[in-house]
Image 1 (cartoon, rainbow, N blue to C red):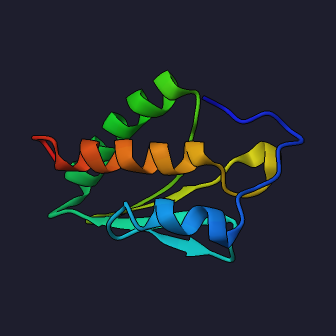
Image 2: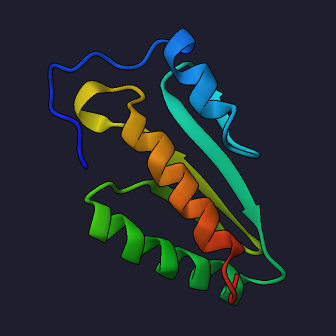
Image 3: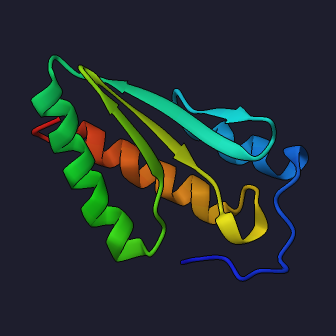
Length: 104
């Protein structure tokens, strides 16, 4: 669920336990979550992006995605607050589930 503007972003103290529940995600500058997913080719990377897009649209929470040969870089943050919210960590976990599902 998207965050409303005016809500403060999570502090490091608040997001650290959430980050600890994820694997391979990093916090950049205290404001963005990032993870790079590796694939054997470009087609598999694009297929992963297509599967992420379905989840993102259903959640109303859209990551920035960079697609290259054999990899996808995912950045998450809550645009309305220009920082991290609990929704970003929930979306990260959902993206990890997409990556772990058959076809990834």
